[in-house]
Length: 315
Image 1: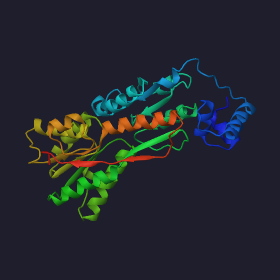
Image 2: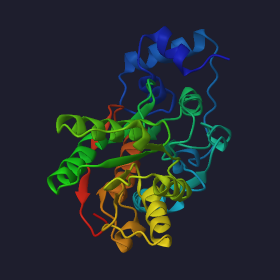
Image 3: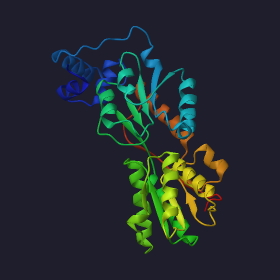
Image 4: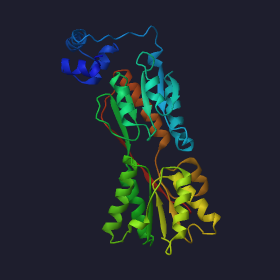
C-alpha cells in the first residue's frame, strides 16, 4: 500500500508537509496543497478523514512498565500540558505502540522508553503520525527528538570528583543507548585528559535497573582493590549498588563513593550525588512541541535540554 513517504517523494515536499495537507492544517500554500493531493491521487493513496475530533485529542505515551520511578516527573509534565490543552493520554508499553498508533484515532506519540525499538517508531511515523522522542535521533521527517546534554553533564560530574581528590574509578554502563554511550564517553575523556588510568576490569554493564547495580556492587566487593568511586550511568543502578554495599558493612562514601545520573525522586531522599535532568520540564516541553506540530506550527528540528550536577552525601 502506498504511504505518505511515497506522496512526499512524488510531490517533492517533506513528510511534515504531506501530514499537514492530509490533516487539513492551514499552514500550507494552495499550490503546494494541490500538488500533494494530486500526488496522493496519482499513487492511489486513500486517506480516511476521522468522523470526529477524537484522533486529534488523543496522544499516545510509550514507556516501559518496569521503570516507573524514572518516569514519574516526565509523565507529570506531559499530563499537565496535555490536560491544559484538553488532550487525552493513552499509555502503552513495548510493541503495543504500533498496534495502537492508528492515524485515524491518535494525533501523535511521545516516546520515553529507551527500550522501544527504532523500527517500531519509524513504523508509526510512516503511518503519518508525528512522534516526539526523548532519548534518540531518528532519520525520519515526522520524528522530532529532544536530547539531554548527557556529555556535558557527565563531564561536570567527573571533573569535580577529580577536583575533590578521587583518583580511582569504576563505571557502570547502561544498555547500548545514545544516553549511555555519551555518559561513558564523557567519563573516559575526562579521565584521559587528567592522566588517570582506567582498567577494563573496572567497567561493568547494567540494564538501568536497581538489580544490576546490586550485582555490580557484589562484583566490586570480590575484587582485591576497591575503587574510590563508582560512577553509575543512572540513579536506579546507583541505588542498587549503595544498598548492597551497606548490607555488607561497606560505608558510602567513606569506603566507596557512588554517584548516578537523572535525579529521580528517590535520589533526593537518599542523598545521592547525581546529574539532574529537568524531567518535569522535559515532559511538558515534549507535549508542547508535539501539539505545535499537530496544529501545524511546529518543526522537526532536534531540541536539546541541559543537565547539572547535584552534590549530595554519597560523594
